[in-house]
Amino acid sequence: MKTILVLVDFSKAAFNAVNYAVEVAMTCKASLFLLYVCDLPVNFTQVPVSLDIDDERLNAEAELIKLKVKIHERTRGDLNIFSEVRNGNFFSEVKSFCEYVRPYIVIMGSQGTSIMEKLVLGGHAVYEMQHLPCTSLAVPCKMRFSEIKKVALAWDFQNPMDRSFIEKIGQLISDFGAELHVISVIIGEKDLLQLRIKTLKSQMEFSRLAPVFHCLEGKKTSKSIMEYVENNGFDLLVLFPGEYSLFEELIFPTHTKKLVLHCSVPIMALHP
Image 1 (cartoon, helix red, strand yellow):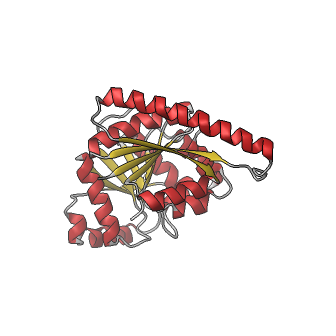
Image 2 (image 1 turned 45 degrees about the vertical axis):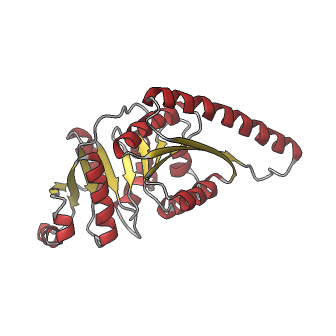
Image 3 (image 1 turned 135 degrees about the vertical axis):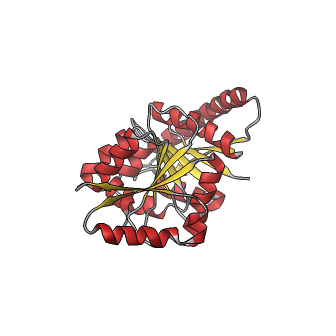
């Protein structure tokens, strides 16, 4: 059975992400796992700090129980719900948990005092997001779940579309019953981009997904894609992290961090 993992810090953004994750889990017929990490400071071996961590853990466990009860009542017991509190380095614990559980999707809030800010603005953000061994989804604070029917895949054609990636995006499209739209920004020769699109269409596994291609013109790739997705009724923006990809341009450069934190459409980093 698939597992949807939600990173919880009890902020407004995180609670919204939990509500969104509940609907995703119900749609995908998956179980829901709530994870809270007591992020240990560098001097966590000191006694006063240890006591604070113990208090934080007890409070987190109590809050997770309350949250599970609310979700159980909301779903009338139709959703399997699990939770865990861990102590340690935030990024290391999330990565370790993902390697052990292998969740289908990791969901987090993208605004406010949220997990996503730690991921995007933290010092080790690039390494952790690129090496998180599963797909992650950032949910805008004001986003309420509605059927995901129109999925945008931002693709720069710089990385090969291998079989594992096609299978992953195909599973996603199938689970949500959605349309797949591939969005690229034209920078340079149009003929080269059209040739790459033709090559991609010739791949039988990918052609079965019946993708619709959109070629945009613009000097700023990230801005063009964000505006197009927000203005054309897309329900989800999917990125593919690689050695070099649109994921890096959209997520990590300083001038685009705010776009991610304030984008009105959920953003998914899809790992094959």
